[in-house]
Length: 338
View 1: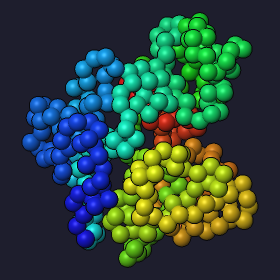
View 2: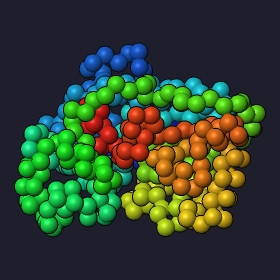
View 3: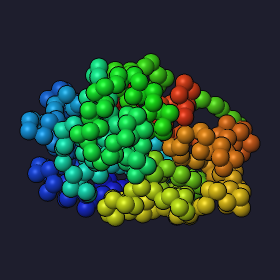
């Protein structure tokens, strides 16, 4: 089956044209022919460029190189899925603006497009605070060690300016906040690298994929595998469903429409046992949790790989080696990376 572009993304392409006021190209660009001007043109046409820069200024051309990576990844996806007999061809650059188009989001300067992350000045520079959950906002007085209203940003800013970026990041991490400094760049392994190898698993005609992930990156990967013919089962917490459900329904469906869905009580022992059986039977697990979350339900990825020959794809904010339990979402992790 050839899907080019994906039928379920055709509505997005139309919507994106309306939201960003410019044409979105169908089909991905040729990576080899992408000169600098072509990159900027594709960056503008995909809709992502309009989401960057100051609110009262022009959009930024500098991140245009991202479209090369997006187009290259899309080409790799098409080539690999074609070998499986179900080619999945997508417009890689257009994926960068997909969520904003669905939600009608625009650039907001020092606040992220989605509204959860914000740059704030501190005593010796800047920090980025990513506060997507109510408990994150509630922890702000503890972060600045002052009895302030967590919704009073004038008072919070006064307290932030009394503290160094390093102290704020250290304390924020202890509180379980997604916080970072712009100058945290560290040497890291390749963007995707193997940390453990187990025995090979027999190839199944229709692979089974368990998708524990939420929001965007993991569900997007799972959706591509579903389009390629895999049986993808989305696993959500019974009391804590995918946060994308609180956003536009069309965007959630875009990423999850082709998947089976199951809700698990991660604190219930019988549900934990069911989960472990499902993992042992799966060909691939996709997750974006910190290691301690998996350990809490009795799952050790390396042990699973050894015992069941299940492949395990882990999407992390700060890696699995040096800082595995540091919380990280997209915007703050990107800032920490430079």
